[in-house]
Length: 256
Length: 339
Image 1 (cartoon, helix red, strand yellow):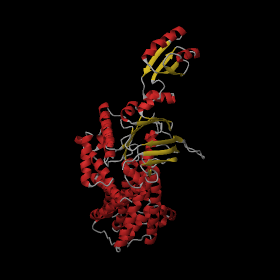
Image 2 (cartoon, one colour):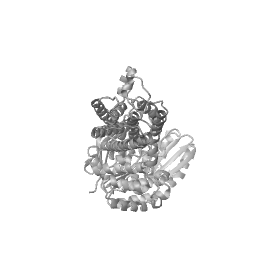
Image 3 (cartoon, rainbow over the protein chains, first blue to last red):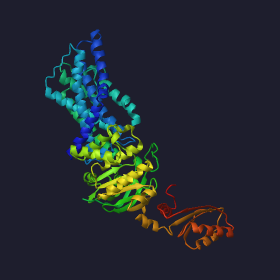
Image 4 (cartoon, chains in turn green, cyan):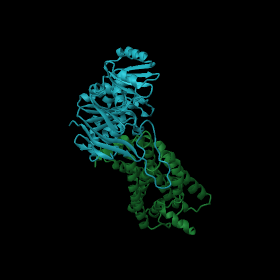
């Protein structure tokens, strides 16, 4: 493995991200933070939602930000760079096994997703306070879950980015990402679905459920949440599955 | 280390759409949406290409669109998997030692594939970084290449707004950035103005003089003639002629080609045409045309005209070409390169 090449390509991605930082920040945070403001501040402040909803909402918003950022950061450049212009060619010809380029994309996406997750906590806290009751009793477990969620977003981005054509980007968001968010236990805990037993079982195929429940379980464990063992096992499974699928598809796209 | 290129019986059959540059003249192929099982579409791009390109040589692959030039380059640069056969850069099998091969080669694709998120200078310096060049060295080389390719005044602009010619120059500069032993140029002068083309030729020759091997593909006869020490003419995925431009041109019977068109000709007339002094070969294309390969060009015309008028055949058109690779291609394939 050629680490010099790997790190140079990572540095290139960091450079491009720095260059687009303003757009990136708006794209990542604007919508989730508006949601936080309306539901956490306005709806709670006017009495339509109980005050505890603030604490319940925060981990879900963090999950949305992380997953959105990772998928976007990996899938969009991949879709664009494999297009007609084939911008990725330069990096495919760098002296490194081709699959490591896909791994590099996953690492870059994971880092961006983690950064987004860590930045949204203070931002949302500022918008919501007072009344947010963040506990994080096991910081290490929280860190591990955050890393697994970030990895999920990046491997998901790799698999999606290598399966989609540019013309299908709109479909990707309306058919895959949007339902994933709404049925991902982001705005409500999984236990809230007990009145909809069929749906409660069906949403378990959605990896975002484990991401938001995992963050909920480690940040605000006072609310009901899925068992941490199930969360970690499911995220590990989805990460491995998406990574293998993504690598295979990436290779198929890169070599004719 | 000076590296040559060798291919042994390379074959490539695409079972999905070939990459854009290797797809021929802008055709795209999409399989019909099948309900049941249907055999995958098969496009045979290479049909047993064996070549030996010496270290330090400028070698040309000449052929029409879709002949297999880009696929050959694709295989030699690790980007296309050969269906069968082997390819070597220096001592390395390209498919089995991809990383070692990638260190030895620089590639200029048929269409500029620059990294649009970077400035011209960054494209060069990051490329240098991918190849492990130290910071100081990549800055120095980038500066020198920008200067050489007349891009210094746009060096710190994003390349998105560059003209086609500027992008092409930057692609070539990028391919030279890590000082590769073997340089691949896939139709490098397509879309360049004559002045830039001359600059390109000068740079290619200069690079070759430092002992580097250069493989370039073209369908431009003039370019092959001006640049290459040896060339292979390929068509339908096969090598149909190989040698120096001089040897190849000499291999066309007579060297001169007269393309004649008549009102109507007969077998008897063609036989008499064949007997004119200096005529080596006569090929009738249809009822009205004939290609005459001969030792002389213009001086033959009055004799042809005389023969036609005495035979009652009306001569409509005469076109004389001097010894050229174009004639060679025509002689081997029966088709013009430009067709």
